[in-house]
Image 1 (tube, rainbow, N blue to C red):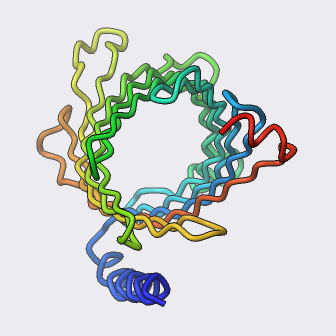
Image 2 (cartoon, rainbow, N blue to C red):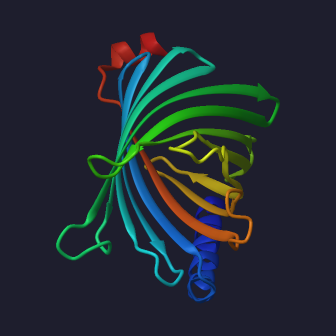
Amino acid sequence: MRRRGCLLAALSMLLWTLPSAAQAGVELRSAASLEIRIAKPLAVSFEEELRLDMRPGEDSQWLQSVVFQIKPVKWLRIEPQYRLSLRPGATVEAPELRHRLALAVRARLKLGVLRLGIRERYQVRFTEPGDTPRQQLASKVTAKFRHGDMPIIPAVWFEFFLRFPEDEDPVLADKLRVGVGLAIPTKVVEIGFGFQIEKSIEDPEEAPLPILALDFEFELDPRPKKNKDEGS
């Protein structure tokens, strides 16, 4: 009952903030992901995400991602990734497609009720043939607070993007994000709410962008029970 009450309260807060958030020119994100555990060290995750940028002149984006998760040890995860981004509002005749290849390395550390996560991700984005690929290094530090008696999992995070030089542009620092959120785990799905601020470093005059996010994370383990017991 406590978990259901927290879920209803969180949904009510989100619905209450969406109209005012849209008027303020924020970005709204909604995503659903499915993680399939193939073997003890290997899993694959599929994600669908919709991003609505409420700022004047900005387009919405539809993103589809595939992530392979390799877990050689308990505290380390290696993730080859591919993401396709569609901007239907770019042009009517030819919507803009963006492809992103990435390799991420994640490390986790448990300190009592604190779960500290560190992620380094190298990514390359392609738009049209002939365009210069955009290379970035995205660093993220996340702190989650987990306790057996708590029906929710609060979290805070910091993310920093470095952009590799393009042509004659020597700028390296690109943008940063600072966010807070909470996750509500259930037997079927984990529901996450997040609020973060994105600030451009390359263009200091650009106003910070608030981002509201709602995520649904599903897990599927089709392995036989015997294999599950051996892998646990």
